[in-house]
Amino acid sequence: MENRESTERQYHLRERAVQLGWPASHVEVIDEDQGRSGSTAAHRTGFQRLVTEVGLGKVGIVLMLEASRLARNNSDWYRLIEICGLTSTLIGDEGAVYSPREPNDRLLLGVKGTLSEAELFTLRTRLYEGRWNKARKGHLQFSLPTGYVHGANGDWELDPDSQVRERLSYLFESFRCHGIARSVVRDLKQQGLDLPTRITSRDGYGSLVWKAASLSAVIRILRNPAYAGVYVFGRWEYTGERRSAKTGKVIPHQLPMAKWPVKIELHHPAYLSWEEYVKNCERLRQNWSREEATGVVREGSALLQGIVYCGICGNKMGVQNHVLREKRSPSYICQASYHNGDADKICQSMTSRPVDAAIAEALLEAVSPLGVEVGFRVLEQLEQDMAAQRRQRELQLEQARYEARLAQRQYDAVDPDNRLVASELERRWNEKLERVNHLEQSYAQAEQEARWNISPQERQAIKELAQNLPSVWAAETTTNKERKRLLRLAIASVQLDGVNKPEQIEVQVQWRSGVLTHFTVNRPAPGDGSLKTPPEAVLKIHEMAGKFSYRDIADHLNVMGYRSAFGRPYTHQHVGYICRRDGLAADRERRQNSE
Ligand SMILES: [Zn+2]
Image 1 (tube, rainbow, N blue to C red):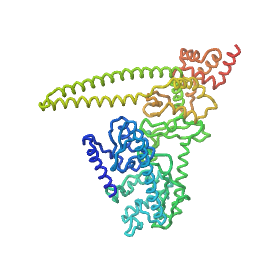
Image 2: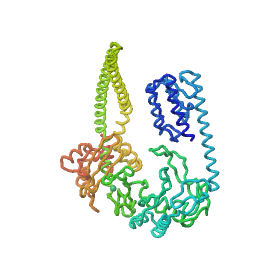
Image 3: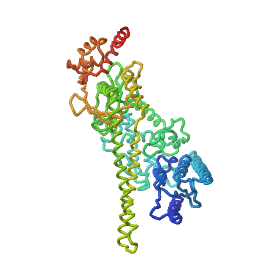
Image 4: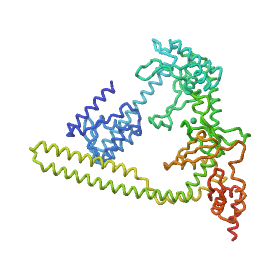
C-alpha cells in the first residue's frame, strides 16, 4: 500500500510542474528506479540519466517527493545539488521550490539530505533487528527449500508430494554411493530423473516445476543444512566489496559452520542426519579443493590462466597441472560441460607450452619499440581523422542552425490569419529545431568518446616500457605471476581451437586495444623436442654472438632459411632471449666495454 501511495504522489508531481508553468509535454516522470533498493546511484539508471540531463542544461526544474528521497545517499545528493547549481536548475518538492544557486536554499537542501539519510538508516536498523529477533526463535519465515512446505501453523513439513520427497532421497542416496557431486548429476541424467523446484517468484508462487539436474543445483541441495532438519539463519553474509556487475547487489559469501549465528537442531523433519550432512560438506570441500588445485595460480605454469577461452564451445578453459615427476607442462582444458554432465567427454585440451611461448613472442613483438612506434602513428592518424570528423560535424550543425533560423523567419513573416500556411511553417520550423537538437546531442557524445588522446608523459612511459620489456620478461627475477600480470595489461583474452586443424592449434588473441590477431602453432608430438629452437640455429647463434648485434644475427638466420620453433622468422628479441638464456649476452657486453 505504502508503495502504491507513493507512486500516486509521484504522478501528482506532474500536475505540480504544470501548475508551476511548465508545458505538460515537457514534463518527464523518471520512475525506472522504483523498487530498486540500491543505496548508491551506480545501478540506478534513472538517477544517472537525471544527472546527465541536468548537466547538459536541459532541465528547468527537478521535482521530487520529499527532496532528497531521490538521492538515497548523501554524496549523490550533494552531487545533484552541485550540478543543479551550475546549470541554474531549480529543485522542488511538494512544499517548496529551491534554487541551488542561493546560499540559503543550498543549506536547506543539504540539511534535508542529511535528515533523509538518517531516517533511512534508522528504518533499516529497525527492520533488521526485528528480523533477527524472529530468526533467533526459528520463527522468521522465508521461502523454504524444495522438499518442504509451510504447515497450517507455520511449521515446516515435508512436501506432501511423494515424488518430490523420493527424488530428494534418491539424490542423497546417490551421493552416498558415489561421493562426487558430478557423478550424482550423471546418475540422475542417465536415469532420466529431473529435480523438483518450487517457484518462488510471484507468478505461480509455490507451483512445482521439474528441471534437468545441474551441478550447481545438486551442490546447493547437498550443502543446504535445512535437509538435516536444522533451522539456520545468517549462513550468508551480505557484506563485502564484491558486487554483481549486472545488478549492483553485493555478492554474498558463506560463513563457516561454526560462525552461523542462528542454528536450531531438530527444528523440522529431516532427509538426512546432521552427521551425514557435515560429512557430505567435508567431502564436497575435499573434492572441490582437489579440482581447485588445477586452477591455483602456480609459479612456472600456464601464462594464460583466467583469460583463455575454448574456440569450440566458447566456455572458459581451465588449467590442468600434471604431477611434478611427469615433468609435463600444464594443459589448457575445456571441461565445463563435462563437469555439468552435459557431455561424456571433455571438449578439447592442449599442452600450454607452445601456446604460451607463441603468445609471449607475439606480446614482445607488439610491445617492441617498433611496434609501439607503429601504434603511435596509428593513433596520430586516428586523431587527425577525428579532427576532420569534428569539423564535418560542426559544419553540419552550423547548417542545421541556419536552416532553423530561416524556418523561423518564414514562420514569423506569414500572416497569422493564414492558419493553414502558418501551421505548415510551424511544423517545418519544429522539424529543423529537432534536427539541431539531434545533431547537438551526437556532437556532445562524439566529443566525449574522443577523449582518449595520450599525453606526452604517457607516450614516454610507454616507450620506456617497450625498451625494457624484453629484458624484464626474460629476467630470472621476474616471476610467472608478474609475467601473467604484464600479459593481462596488453591482452584481454585468448581463444584456442585445437580441433579444427590436425596437429595444430589455432590461436586468436584479443588485445586490449581492440585488435584481433590470429596465428597457428604446432602441437608438439609426444616426447619430441620440436618446440625447442632447432639446434642448428642455436649453434649459429652461439657462433655469431658477441660478434654481431642481435638484429644482424636474426637477419642472418632468416636469410639462411632458419625458422623458429613456431615456423616464424627470427627477431632480435628471440636471439637476445637465447643469448641471455645461454649466458652469451654478458660476453658481448664485456667485449664492447673493453673496446
Ligand atoms: Zn569447449
